[in-house]
Length: 455
Image (tube, rainbow, N blue to C red):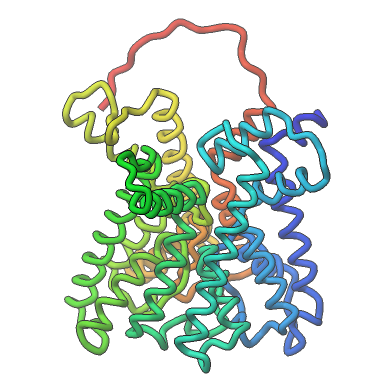
């Protein structure tokens, strides 16, 4: 039993839970919020939101918490962004312990999608990429607006953006820079980089460096992006472009175009990018149209890419699901994505992940709606509340952090529901299912097979 509890599948769960509990205890201290009281549930909510890089808040981060409290939140964001698997293996490596083959395979499949990798070299690359991009982002924010972004604020927002956390020291998030092209670009780059995944970032960096060497040495065979990176980049660009177009026209038709075309375009582009688990906003979410909110919920469910700071079912899962549906329409036996087709195990994983996601989101929405209104309100009066509840649940599960304004009004029971959704969403339902399955033993018998009519 003890070996099962410390298996590669369960170690991230315990470390994640331990970090959240430690952060909650620190945030509960008076030193973290000298201006007013903070209940333990609110402290636990904030710690979970930070560690799960979600961004949902029950109190204003910039005014309610002291510098000590903000540093605790920042540390939790950084730890959650890098990923508990990375920190776990880093601790094992620093302690000089032997990393077993099972641990290596588990880490490789979760973060690199490649079981044959060097653990120290991989960890070093992750840290270098993370701190380099966060440092460059902080420097850019401070240089463009030294008044709006002090050095500490620039670092805080850069880390929050790259880790796709969405925590802001300003009560209105980034609305004061809605039409600022430079600020929007910096945040979009940081959010996108954090949501692509460390493997994709590393491969893009190697490809860029190789192209420079090719020009210098005049080589004829440059490196080629892997299938995984190609699928991630193509799907990410597609989602951002489609999301921008939908939000642009939906908000424009409703008269929410802001101050001219330029600001309206930046707002649509930014919300399309940030909906992929970042949590920042340059417009008031509660004032957006139902069409925009519905499409943003779809973007939130998809999220970022495997091995990244982002949540959601991931871009590769979305692409595989689209490929599966397309193959069924065409009558193909293989689900082809680019130059390869998916094996049956991958398709089973996709179906399991999507099914569990919809079950968890549906159950969470119903529970939150029942706790919010007792389930007794008439539909015509409560329909807007139901949409807000669903938006909040998806935002929590996909670790996005966008909110229509519902979070601060939640009761303790509703906050606990959101806490569970953030925790499960950050670890991933398939990962938790695998952890539970690791306790089970394989059946030693088979039953006869048969066919059922469907559809």
